Length: 92
Image (cartoon, rainbow, N blue to C red; front, side, top):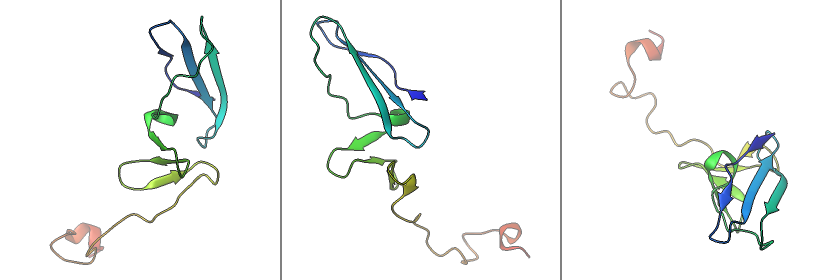
């Protein structure tokens, strides 16, 4: 299990979430005076969850915890360009 840090609001309500390894929410624990959920868009590993797609935005592409995969390929440009790669990385 992976846990996020505990979050508190002004009424001392505590919100904690637990996730399985692929990023799916396993449990949400709420305790305190007011049993209310504290809004938190930063979830699994501190990444931002898109509320519409239910995918994590990892600054370059989206990760889907339901299938444990990224939904886009990495962007790469001109990988075979001599100016980008050194002789070592080209395998010469």
